[in-house]
Length: 115
Image (cartoon, rainbow, N blue to C red):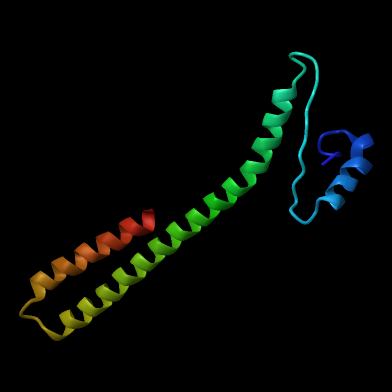
């Protein structure tokens, strides 16, 4: 952390604090300084940096979940399409209606593939 903040001279103190408080991985900090010296900006940077990692992880998990659902829906449509094509091959009396259904499912599958 000291290297990231370009405060290498605080490295040993930060390491000691991290080792001392490792069980709960937290430490109470007091920030003091002159008026308009950047205290709030410093704290905002630390909070943003530490919250952006979990947010990015959540975003990746949500995207993966959405992709999995899309993939499952596409597979379902393909299975239904295969069943209808098999039925179509066996029965010519319902051919026009089945062809419409097959086309509708194929259009649905293509729409899913486009995202």
